[in-house]
Image (cartoon, rainbow, N blue to C red; front, side):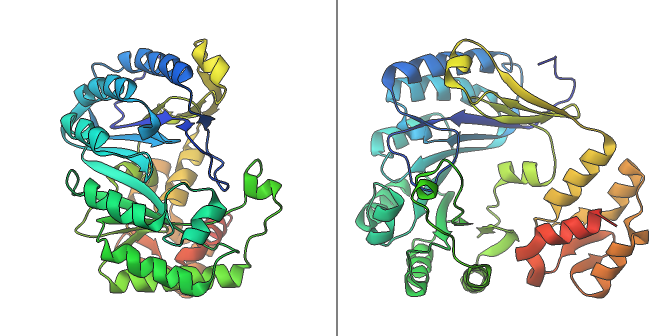
Length: 366
């Protein structure tokens, strides 16, 4: 990678290790191994040293399961990362329910991690077993009670669209979720990806109509319970939006370090190798996408319309020389109330948020 000329404000760190593999997960991951994790953190710290003079507004440690690291390696990583924080930095770490404990929470607090994202997925023990998740319903309550001693800003993940589940379980899950009063909720529909255990089991997804029905119910329920729907799959209380993820959705620049991590800087998107052996040998860049103004414009539209903030017509005209108002597809979408125009801002109508991808395709293919 050449020297970065711009000044990205967000940093993502990928920790690929997990102690068990969930049957739906297709993220870049490896079974936890003490020796390999030591070598991995060694390499990661080499990469981080290149950014020792940077200060980031958001830092996000994702995975995998970052808290699967032992205390020694977690301490080494956090010690370096905390020095890269700007004042007011949003500093997030992901964890499973099973891999968090008071000792690790204390360590996170010491290094000023101020946001945690926990993969609950479901409260139903039968569902959890089928998905290959280690925790049980009782563990969720116990661990989140513990987490609240250290964190005020907590995201909880919930999954829907599971063919082995029932509608009443989803409703029960949502009721139990909001009673825990997290500041942020992320919802994910079950997608059967290749190379996952569910794919090998030949599990089939539910039909689109049922999936849409569940999505609409979730949105209505969370809105009723005080959660603002600010992105297709994300809801927030008390303005505790994920500032890091908004970096992606606003098409702002960011650095990604670690196995399979992606970056966007200087009109390039590049991805780190997902191969552990190559990474430990010092190999890094796996693929590079050089972007032209048309590409950047399309990313801006595609990502921006995922959020309630939408896209800015004036910004598009100034930076890309495109007047969307003259676009025939734009006129049709506006006429049919599929998109909403307020001043110079465009958003997707809440009724069409679920099919945002189709709206974007129509808008970009005039």
